[in-house]
Length: 309
Image (cartoon, one colour):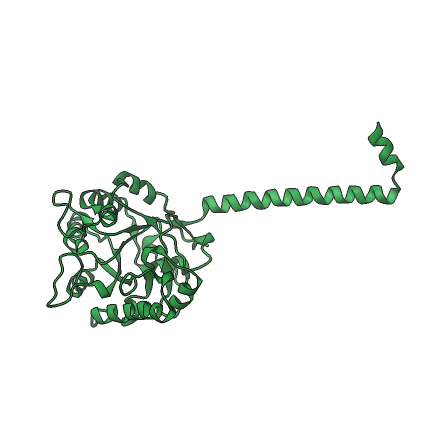
């Protein structure tokens, strides 16, 4: 009753203002709710590609061969036997193994239409960091075996540190050599990309050193692969060592590379990608079973004629 009396006591203009304000607040509340709902639905339904980030690949039956003997490297190395289970599933379910340039062209820059032969497939990216020799001794034979079984290739993006590669006259049982890379590339299994020159944390070095790490990595990898592909097809993309980047690193990386990859344990959702130098990758270590990685892979979006947006 007191409330009714209060309204009656107000001038007609004030009553109209109160009603107008109340109406506007309701409109704003409804608009915000719709915007929030749309954003959530957009996030949940956004086209996505899992980018799995591996390091070394060890054989459970010979776990110390080619392995760096420190706890972090051991933990990040993935069993060859589980890798075969994962690859077998992906090949038997007709996944599309993207190279770094294909990911960029078809899904990030969207400057090429998805080829008809890939419509209906799920895209996947398998990446391997740090130039470990076990990629060549353990992963490559597995890739070849599965190609024989299924008649198609699983491609691996190798993010490499040319400063640590095994050199002629100074052989290494830990790191890949240029010859290893040339063999795997020629056979169609390796995509050669950059991981910096010597695996320094790029956020913790001065600008002149940062430029050396970025520029020399690209130059040396292109020299390593000379004669096998156009220079621009090699080391056009970079994965930051330790997944560490900031605005300065991204700005200088943009002078040499078309895109940059993080390690942030997130799946790549295209409508949420605002920065092609901050591409999400899922960290893989030996604690993630093949079944768990298959679950991650199954989150990939089935491709249609409509481009991701």
